[in-house]
Image 1 (cartoon, one colour):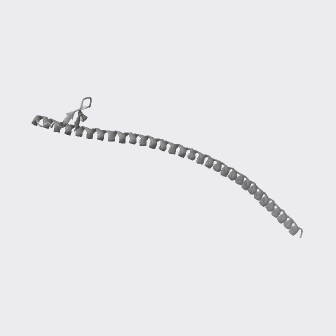
Image 2 (cartoon, one colour):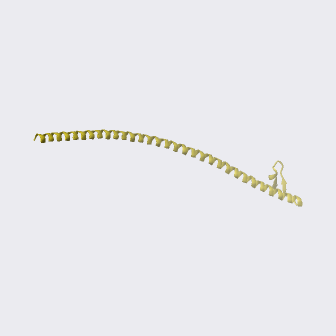
Image 3 (cartoon, helix red, strand yellow):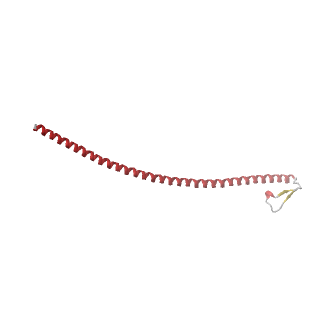
Length: 135
């Protein structure tokens, strides 16, 4: 019977050691879980701060890009207007040159043929393209 008591006591001690080991293991796991949770929270906070900083940088880059596009568009529009005015001026100059040439050719033909009409009067102080006035 003493033997059974000793076995029961030994088994009780063994179970007590297992419980202590299980509680110790669980406590260690809880400490590790708490540490992991704190580290995870810090990691998430750092990520959130990085995200906000990245959003700010992207916003600034977007603003700078839009500003640059507006400048380029403005420059292009200005150059386009200058070119359009120059093209219009060249068209008008070409048209004036053609009219002047036609008029000069016509006048020359009349002079060669000897048919310069008496109703044509040449006005002094005018350029050759607009010197003739019809009465």
